[in-house]
Amino acid sequence: MILLSVVGLETFYGASQALFGVALEVQEGEVVALMGRNGMGKTTTIRSILGLERPRAGTIHFDGRQITGMRPHRIARLGIGLVPEGRRCFPNLTVLENLVAAARPGDWTVPRIVDLFPRLGERRGQYASTLSGGEQQMLAIGRALMTNPRLLILDEATEGLAPVIRQDIWAAIRTLKGRGQSILVVDKTLSELLPVADRCFVLEKGATVFSGSPAALTAELQDRYLGV
Ligand code: ATP
Image (cartoon, rainbow, N blue to C red; front, top):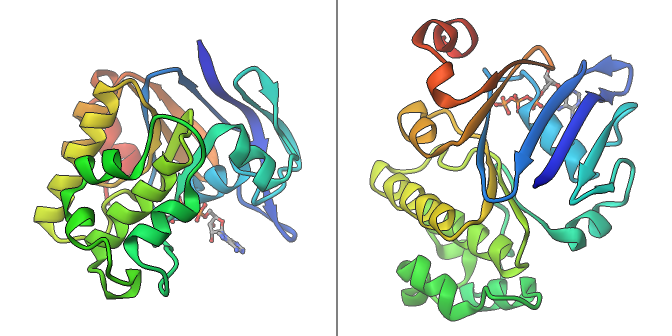
């Protein structure tokens, strides 16, 4: 079943066009990689899906419903959980308070989040502002999961994190995939991203230039679209 379908998306910042016809699709239970060099439109695509930017053209369907132009809180409530670039937890709330504040009915509860990220259990009484970057990312993922989303979106899943923490984040993504969680993920670590992805979409200059399996994204295509 198609969970998310984006067709012909065009989004502007003022007079400047950032997206020129993005298309992508996430099937239920899939991990989908959204790729592309810096500034190619990944974050703008995600913000458009979430209703945080208003596309001028194109359609977005989620769970069979047209969500284009809907307000962000309504879209979130339909079941899309975002882990934004740069994390963003409430710094003056504790780990536990951050998790509880995000809670919506469903299978994901604080004990299950702590099971996924034991460090969050150890730090449950600490203010989010005192956590390391990696712990904040775990908390941001935990917060998004506490909303019990049908689709989890991670923008720059591991950017700027220490290598050992990155491993924990990738392990968590693999665990989530094993449980059937649908995920749309942006990350630059191809060696981790490609093995976990069921499908890849590559953006260049605000348009989708590749869609297919990780195997179909050959070294030559990686070099053309993702190489520095
Ligand atoms: P990165 O990996 O660097 O975050 P990205 O692929 O997510 O890149 P976007 O952040 O979506 O790319 O940027 C797409 C284009 O839109 C770029 O040309 C960028 O300069 C422009 N852009 C992004 N945010 C804004 C903004 N708030 N105002 C104006 N232009 C913007």
